[in-house]
Image (cartoon, rainbow, N blue to C red):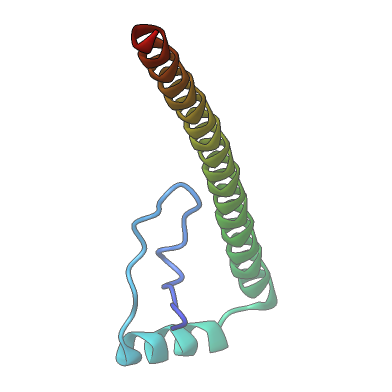
Length: 99
């Protein structure tokens, strides 16, 4: 679903943006229709800046997720190596006791 934000609610630092109802959207559209070119350009610039900030945040989250996945893979490989070592040790001990 597409979220529409109020002209007064756009803030790069604020992730607490609420979704507007249809009457609120209509009111915002009426405000936009009466904006001057400068006001519209300013609003568009804020919207672009907010979108760029959201993209940067998403990219950082993706990098963090990839790093966590790599760390989990390394931990799994280490655990597998420990399990294999312990199994080989137990097998060798059993063979020595059998002699």
